[in-house]
Length: 409
Length: 100
Image (tube, rainbow over all chains, first blue to last red; front, top):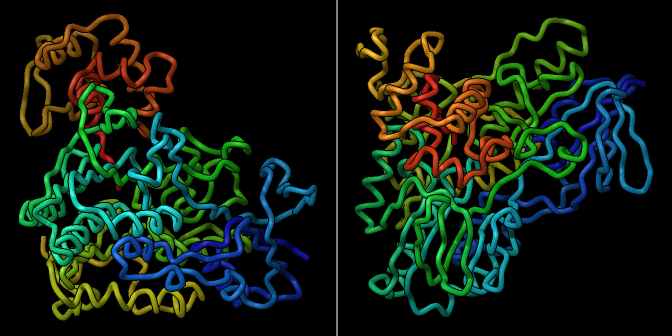
């Protein structure tokens, strides 16, 4: 019996388990999936929790519900990967052998990396919204907040779902307008980037939207520390920004397991061939999604598109053939812009987000780099698609490779 | 694209002033480029520039801070304003792109 081992039962690992079990004979291939947590979080939903749009039960389901029969699912902490010997050590002493390994252990927030961030104000006046705990604590705080300086800061690049902090300030603008205290809330967006986003056209569109909504952008700010006494954030070049409430995207890092296994870079991301999605070092190891160092967004849409390429290449590798599928870095992000509207961007390694229609050229229904109600409905519907189609590895009517059709240069 | 003269050589540069061909770079060019940024290069600067040239593929401020040559604060002190962008320019490599 040959063995495929998948580490991580998040978006990527779950999709792969479904695709592979459907394809590979049960008599020949054993598929095992390991994760330390039993709950699957719909992470794009965390953003809506502080504003009371989603509740905790809207974003959680048992991981086991999405794993097909015939896949061995183990809930266990992983101690170490030994890629030289094709072995994975689990906590408690169990050792798993593999012929092929798929690492999909994701990325996580690491507030410990910034001095003062997890100080006395943590979850009192300093919050993240990338964890269920942070999102719920912030919801409670906003329920009684009377206004003041709201600072949204990004600590380090890259980070998961790069549009989420923008969506957060757009939704905050709407929320405080509806509560009736927008005039008492000063919203500032503090980023290490030189503008609202990385790519020129999206930066311009989003920058104008921020200005329209009276949200101040402070670019080129690289966070060194948080001062809980003075209530300021400080940058490495000595700039200070005061806050009454700080919402933060903490430093993102790959799982500690990757560091323990000596397989990661400075931020525990695994050096991965950006086209084949195979580890740069080990021929029988593939890396899917946020756990890799490929130069595109860390986001579920990327994982979904990449999973199709990884699947094809793994099939080739199993048969000893040349890997022919190439990942183009395709990412696709809905951006909630508040008041029932949204935008959408579609891009890859080479092409920045452009205006146009998606997914059908000339028709849409979604408008790229536009601010429309239809785009917002797309985001609302997406939660259903995620649970019922995407995780189960079923076909979606969108191509994994980015298309120029429908885009305006 | 434009042409600029550094250390007596006419070189092709991008609109942002980055060398188009990193192999044409030398220390004299670096010194003149640094002057334009208001920086007088020291041995420390050159040690950082060497690290930057050798790690072009996966450069981040954090990585330079972990290099053992300077910490992040020191990196900002050597190349004030935007240390990665400015040092990459002086090192003669392409403009770093942050991919989000």
